[in-house]
Image (cartoon, rainbow, N blue to C red; front, side, top):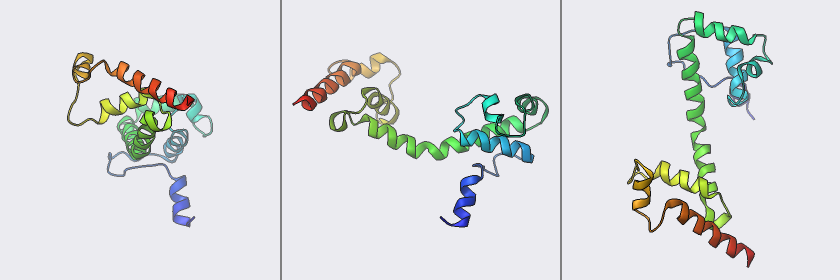
Length: 150
């Protein structure tokens, strides 16, 4: 791994054009901690391995103009960069017939990525199927389970 690649792995994902706010070293440290946990943590947990107390994080939102917008922009950038991996995992999970995937993932994939049809209600979804989408996916899963048992 190159030195530059190693440095990029340790820096928080940022977009310098997101806002004019200039974060402090402590704010960058907390951002890096949250991103290392994939934002899947409480404020207390996110701040626990930094020199910043959780109360300070809340004060930054209340008292530092631009901090909240900066923080939100960093989260959006972080998750935007994760989308290809999420789409790949969702697609992999949706392959019910071939791999024993999750029917719920197949439903989510269809609802999210079918550009030709954007349903507004369950009635709209079901109108294009011979049965409800749930019954179609259940039948797919049962068919797959039957093939697996052979």
